[in-house]
Image 1 (cartoon, helix red, strand yellow):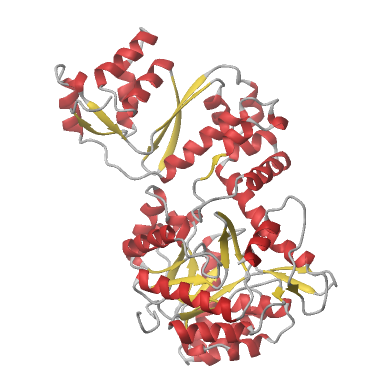
Image 2 (cartoon, rainbow over the protein chains, first blue to last red; image 1 turned 30 degrees about the horizontal axis):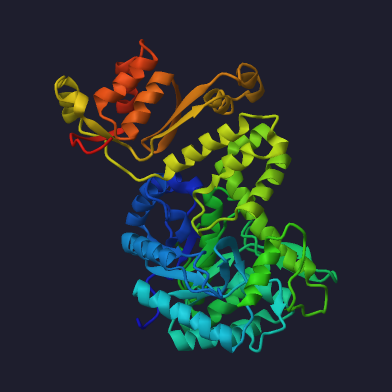
Length: 290
Length: 260
């Protein structure tokens, strides 16, 4: 089993790489900590996606973020998918690889969402076995992302943070702290997001995600936040991010945007804002971002 | 475990049902919360089909497309986390979808759009070096036995409808005016090529389609040209070769006798 947390990404702001921005990125070569891609989007044989990623990767640090491994799935891991992932990692040698505490495949169908699981001894064993297998196959430590969720399970016997802490302890994996997910899940389940962060194994954190959410209400009219990745980062999430930074120090921080993709400068500005918050905490002058 | 089977089943059930065993902090009905997952699954997959089928979508409108795509998702959810080619099978589904029967060309357009996506993501392959190719084309003795390997992105669709004209009309500024000029009942052949980083769709004659299809299946150059000429005595071999060469579609040639 590999040891140590992948801390290869620079402690700076990054953004998700979107095909809409391929050319502009090559033309303008923006100052940026790193790019992140969804692994599955690049599991194609050739063409423009690989053309652009190859060129962008030459100039920037890269995080590969899987959304289809179904680590929380009741079924065995999809070895063919793991092989595709290994090939992609081999090709692009990313500084970091991460996946989700969630499931997305069942009975041969891929459901294309990050689905929740109950937290108890049996699911803990299964998730740990899956992460052990992933780390063994990929020959590297992965970061596990905390989920955004809308329901909880009567069968759960552990809190989410207890579950995550145990997974990290048993598998040696790192943690991708998605601050937006913390906020969304805590609002949805009426918990204190700061207490949630304090309860996580913070020394294992290797990256942070920030994103925007959408607002809805549940059957009783209580707020229900949807992890939409379709809006700018909310003020409450920026504040929670500062709370996390105070405990973690500077961290590779991704602005995640997958829907209603804005112009590149808008995303870069959010990444700069994250970077300013980091720099302010280490007392550095604010010279990088305008 | 059967918990996930029930959960997954409820996600893909046609009617809104909620799996048992869910809890909410305020004791509220978990139904609307579970519906967020149902909605995420369905909307994301409909969006994936809409992204890969922009012209099909425009031909029927957002509402019709979403309803049709939803039924396809329920019938044939993706089998792989790699969604780039999700939608293989959508054209066949449309062909057998009674509400679309009034638009017999719709399935063909969807088929063309999927070829376009395939071309976009197909493996890279270098075209034959120009010198080597010119030498081969000038070799009147050797050329007939040559079997060409075509670029993996190359696609061919022989349609009973004016599928290229329909597609092209949607690439113009005034779609309605362009569509009014299209005789949808005219049979057309579409050649799909990836040129550089762009995918091109061009209309080709029957004979050219037969020639290229034969080459793609590994038939020797002479036999492929012969079949094309048999269909259309005025088959323009030089123009067809020019199209393939400009599109970087001739990747290598071999002279083995083993292929068909």
